[in-house]
Length: 65
View 1: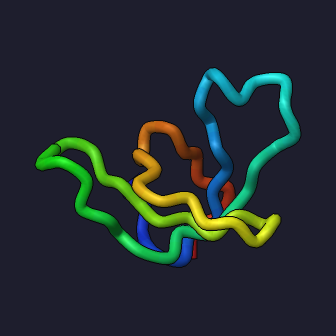
View 2 (view 1 turned 30 degrees about the horizontal axis):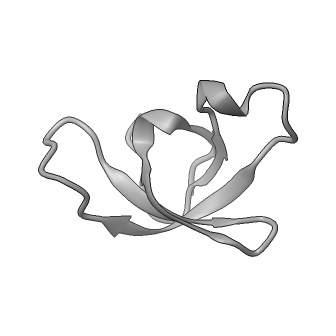
View 3 (view 1 turned 90 degrees about the horizontal axis):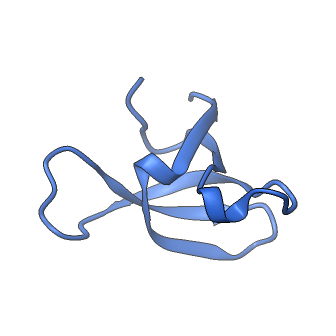
Protein backbone atom coordinates (compact mmCIF):
# COMPACT_ATOMS: atom_id res chain seq x y z
CA UNK A 1 0.00 0.00 0.00
CA UNK A 2 1.40 3.35 -1.04
CA UNK A 3 1.50 6.18 1.50
CA UNK A 4 -0.23 9.43 0.69
CA UNK A 5 -0.94 12.80 2.27
CA UNK A 6 -3.56 12.49 5.03
CA UNK A 7 -2.60 8.96 6.09
CA UNK A 8 -2.31 8.28 9.83
CA UNK A 9 1.07 6.67 10.45
CA UNK A 10 3.27 5.52 13.30
CA UNK A 11 7.03 5.71 13.51
CA UNK A 12 8.42 2.24 12.94
CA UNK A 13 12.20 2.74 13.07
CA UNK A 14 14.07 0.08 15.13
CA UNK A 15 15.72 2.78 17.28
CA UNK A 16 12.25 3.75 18.55
CA UNK A 17 11.46 0.29 20.03
CA UNK A 18 10.60 0.41 23.71
CA UNK A 19 9.59 4.10 23.62
CA UNK A 20 6.11 5.58 23.59
CA UNK A 21 4.33 5.07 20.30
CA UNK A 22 4.81 8.01 17.94
CA UNK A 23 1.75 8.62 15.77
CA UNK A 24 1.17 11.37 13.22
CA UNK A 25 -0.37 12.45 9.93
CA UNK A 26 1.44 12.82 6.61
CA UNK A 27 1.07 16.50 5.67
CA UNK A 28 3.47 16.96 2.75
CA UNK A 29 5.73 15.02 0.41
CA UNK A 30 9.34 16.19 0.61
CA UNK A 31 12.05 15.75 -1.96
CA UNK A 32 14.99 14.28 -0.09
CA UNK A 33 17.62 12.87 -2.39
CA UNK A 34 16.68 11.31 -5.71
CA UNK A 35 15.42 7.89 -4.66
CA UNK A 36 12.89 6.39 -7.05
CA UNK A 37 12.02 3.57 -4.66
CA UNK A 38 11.44 5.45 -1.42
CA UNK A 39 9.54 8.62 -0.55
CA UNK A 40 10.11 11.14 2.21
CA UNK A 41 7.38 13.06 4.03
CA UNK A 42 6.72 15.86 6.46
CA UNK A 43 4.83 14.36 9.42
CA UNK A 44 2.72 16.25 11.96
CA UNK A 45 3.18 14.21 15.14
CA UNK A 46 0.39 14.11 17.73
CA UNK A 47 2.55 16.08 20.20
CA UNK A 48 2.48 19.01 17.75
CA UNK A 49 6.03 18.65 16.47
CA UNK A 50 6.89 18.34 12.80
CA UNK A 51 9.09 15.58 11.41
CA UNK A 52 10.85 16.70 8.25
CA UNK A 53 12.15 14.28 5.62
CA UNK A 54 10.90 11.09 7.30
CA UNK A 55 11.41 8.11 4.99
CA UNK A 56 8.43 5.90 4.14
CA UNK A 57 10.31 2.76 5.23
CA UNK A 58 10.50 4.20 8.78
CA UNK A 59 6.70 4.57 8.88
CA UNK A 60 3.78 2.18 9.13
CA UNK A 61 0.26 3.07 8.01
CA UNK A 62 -2.28 2.99 10.86
CA UNK A 63 -5.21 4.27 8.78
CA UNK A 64 -5.31 5.28 5.15
CA UNK A 65 -7.23 8.41 4.13
